[in-house]
Image 1 (cartoon, each protein chain N blue to C red):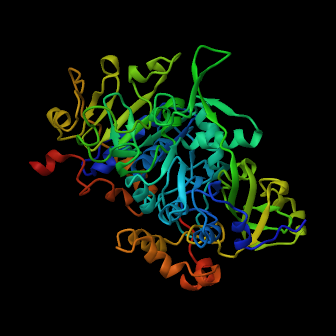
Image 2 (tube, rainbow over the protein chains, first blue to last red):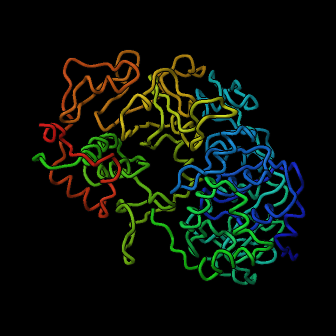
Image 3 (cartoon, each protein chain N blue to C red):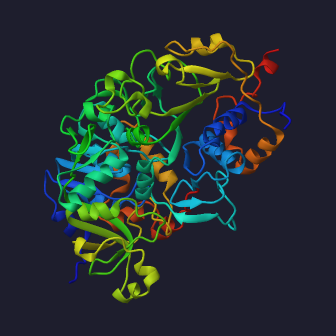
Length: 291
Length: 270
């Protein structure tokens, strides 16, 4: 089955009001080209579930978001995401704020078709008091109370991988695939942008196949976009773009806000965008961060 | 071991904070931020060679990585994969001790990393979010590092948003006891504290050289339990300073506490 498509074709399959999971972590390996295609679309009222970075900030600032399910939204080296911060401080979005591990449990529950996973995480904190939808339940096996972390069922997930074949076998060769396998499993449809399209026999080498973290049946669409994670990193191919993130953060203080940023960079296509940020070679030359 | 006389407050804090990890044995030590990370690294190199650490990315190390950019030929001492999803398996096993720096810490030891002021739907200042604090706080021991000890961090009343569980009887989950919660040391630019006072009251453990008890109380928005005798925080040894310097070749520690003051403030003020 050939699942190759364009970013526009993938985004055309999304609908207003959907719950969308976004893979990656903060400023790392986010499917930013797909996020940019949403920014170019009429989509709105989305619920976004993510270990958030500029993906969440941009979608909030562009008025695409009704609700964010998050444990953090951060650019790491710039701790506070400027546009998420604005959205929260203006009260313009609903939120479900949970612990990082609770998000993992919610994705697992959705993946496994169960309504919740019991956990101690969240007890005694405002995660419980501020989320009336998250129930605290009795255990049939002991006398303690437990948080019933509900399944986070996703209508669609967006993920960026290093390599994929057209059948949807996706490889993440960077050191961490984060929770992307669970985002793929928890979603009805999963769209994966990749830096490089490869032939299926690339995975005949077990060392390469070892870095495939979900089955191709979980992949709905494959969208080859070299540099598609920019300005986030795609280790080992390129790091995150520090000057670009600084400019993005600074734009939140300008009168024009996100519109100024989008006018300068977004363009009508990913080709436009990459030209506006200096081209693919410049993206691929960005040094990996040292932690 | 001879105590050094020339050391910075950051170095004093690293050595004091490393005590958190000294008796932990084979557990994952996670220090978020330069001083906590150097504290865990120092413990691994000295008092607790069994400590486990990651590279702050996705690998477990058998030797801590120096902080900051490393030379192209540097080979990290990886011993296993330890991506973020696996971190949670470790967290929930309890075999971890994290040291973090929240924005607020209240008299119950509850902390806030999420939002300040306003209402929850429209906070005055949105911060990071709860991150992993809820899970850390109920799963394993935790310590705090506070580079600027003041009444905004150690504020009167309860945290604006409770990200991590503390010794608050009103929030105690059914079937749990306050003793299930395990907050260890609070290292600040003034002193070391813990929650070992009566009924888990915050308690002064040691004062940094040149700091008075009154200074600690004045900068804490709730009563601090003061034992009859309060020792001075132990000065780093020359050997410890050498190890810290090797672990932090770019001297990032100099930028962690405002003004990078000397460890013994009595010397500068005299």
